Length: 130
Image 1 (cartoon, helix red, strand yellow):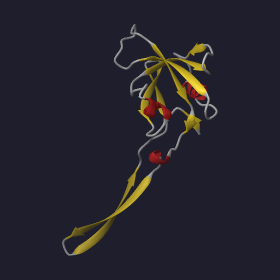
Image 2 (tube, one colour):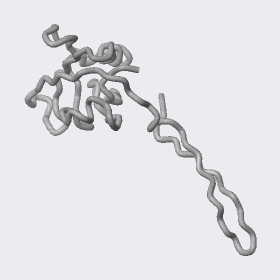
Image 3 (cartoon, helix red, strand yellow):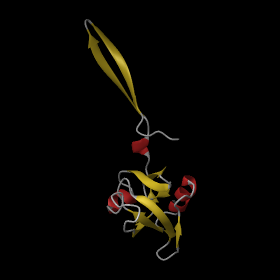
Image 4 (cartoon, helix red, strand yellow):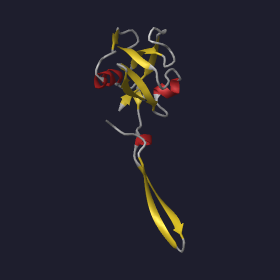
């Protein structure tokens, strides 16, 4: 998929950055942080910014995703700012997002218990989807 590499969840009516995908445009830019709230989304370098507070999360995600190399602008209320805090508008260039780091992984460990050696399987689930 093509986007900014931010995992978004709804918190107190705001689409909020829950996680930054390693190597994604958001993480590489240093402009977004976990907990930042998205209050508006604009398309292109000078498209109007549409307010998204109270908008369904899947609609907000669709607005943020787009063609590789295209620009999306986000009106951000920083995580450490109050409800009346200072907003900032950031521009990010969409790119391919690799979800490999979010895939389930397996590991098999050999554990010695007395004279016997037993194999234990471990499944790591880095992300749960609602």
